[in-house]
Length: 573
Image (cartoon, rainbow, N blue to C red):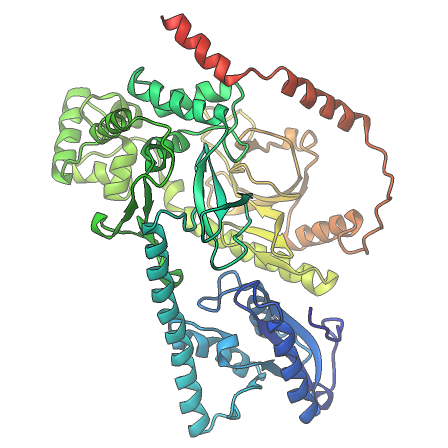
């Protein structure tokens, strides 16, 4: 790893001292480039010594592609520090233009450099033959270098894709996750086995190849049983998954089965011996697209078949007949006829009416079920104002999360980042530490009934929940409730005044009181204190020992699936 002097953040330095301090950004594309980071650091160190610069900060992206910024934690942290003013340096040293990024849009590369320049920080490319001083010559050469870096990635992507298609056509496995009942085997150029590859392992040499092999006999029996249940017994995906979970048969991820997993197995041609590649593609980090069938690369007899061709074809026919495509005007006509017969519409009526598409299908085609209602001139009696205000409250929660994160960063030095998948703050970019949810009041049946608030947790895992409670009209924030981590398995959390003690929750009136309470909790929990060393011989708690004993008992009593299949077939006979 790169060695750099670590300076405490938020240190106020004189302008003359700050001008002689620099941060370095280093990146390598793959883990196979073992010495790339060290080589970049050596060149940057020589550049800094010639100009009397002291490297005080290091931002690193190891094994990360430069095509886009997503996943590059080092560059993201650098840009965030620059934008927030949390820097104690005036220069950013990069090995060359391609290490900064191989963005397919060269304006994106220039944008991140402009952010640094706008905040008074100069970006220098140490191995380039030009100084990044803003002159006409340097601007022209730098832009050409950016185009060359982007074009290199594009050409390399085309060559790699062509090579993968050729290898897949020869019957070898090329990337992609495996489904249940299969495993990968590494072979050399003479087709001699070199052992089974575990999850996450790659082949050792470029001349080695990967073939698919059948899994254990129990896994093969499960796959055959799934096809038998679907084709012969005409069971649905959900029924098959429920029966597998009932007899404690885990999937290849060690988790319970779902209907989506069952459908994926029934569609997989690997079980009849075919290897199919290039069904989908994602070129240079762009949107995933479904390729037409004439672009698919299919290799027959590449895997030992475990399912008969006739049984597989019958399964494909059944799945194809499950979905019938009808035009949107016909969907609306059927919905209008249902309204005339029933007098009203709801999700339950749509779902239980024969010949009518599902509510999800109407949402997919028209954007929402209310828009479909509007197109046929029907207005539902249900109050949907809350759905219209969801984006507004999402913006409010994001702003609240940013204020809390800034307060904890300024006063406690905690680096919390806003997650993209929702209003949550993550510590070190990994686990959720604080989640934000809005609690609204459902309509009260009587005026004498006490006020209740309900928040949707969405099965979030977090150490702390900050829940703004809305007023009677659900228009403004009335107060804030801080709820610690709970083992509540319900998707909704009810927060009335009487239930706060049961949830170990604390209610505050203002935002300042909220921030003060959160800071006090973080200080008392030890998040800002140095971590204590873990004892070497730590005694296990009695609850842990009991949990392990229950796991061993459950494993010992787990039924044999192959025996279960034989028993069910005998019972049917």
